Length: 234
Picture 1 (cartoon, rainbow, N blue to C red):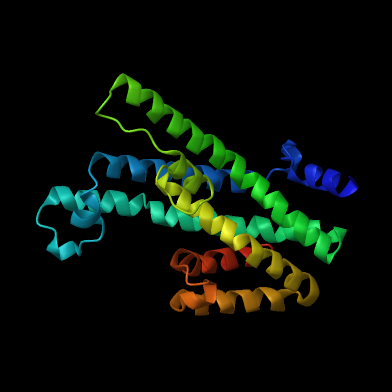
Picture 2: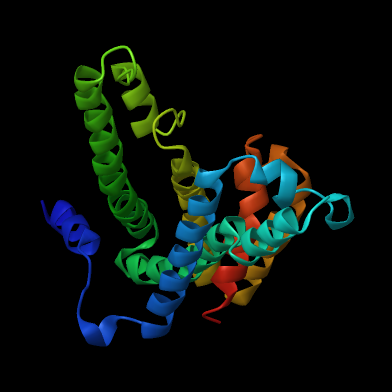
């Protein structure tokens, strides 16, 4: 019971104003705004991805698509996601050190559970609401809107696939990064900055070699941002 109580206490959000970093909150706000603008533009026309975003500037035929390229490059959702990953690395390396005060093994378990508790409830609510809305609309507009199946809901909740909420791929990266950050937290506790340098080198190597990240390209290409963020508190 004492262990469960410890986990429960650690999974609670600390909302005391004195414990919040206003600079981090500001960066989160800017990154979230960038994501909103980015997806709003692409929601208007997904063709902008090929016609403007990834097209070489000199190959774009008109001023309109050049302006769109400038706009979505300025409000780059990809950059915002990288910022979120770096912030996670920064916050989680500090969180791991607090958890490890309970002991190496026990603290690592608490760290993993705490992080999962921060991610999964929000995913559950988001996926459930979207599925419920489509289910209701399928009755209002039969034949026009198809409700999501139970398998699709389950797959998205387990982060095996993203049939309902495509952007939840970032949460899968966050979840897969938890064990890595737990190990890095132990290395940092035992070896200091050398542990973080090892993590940085590993993330650089995995960037070009996904096999180091269990052949999951999204994790191998994102791990470097977690490692750079983990260096910030030092």
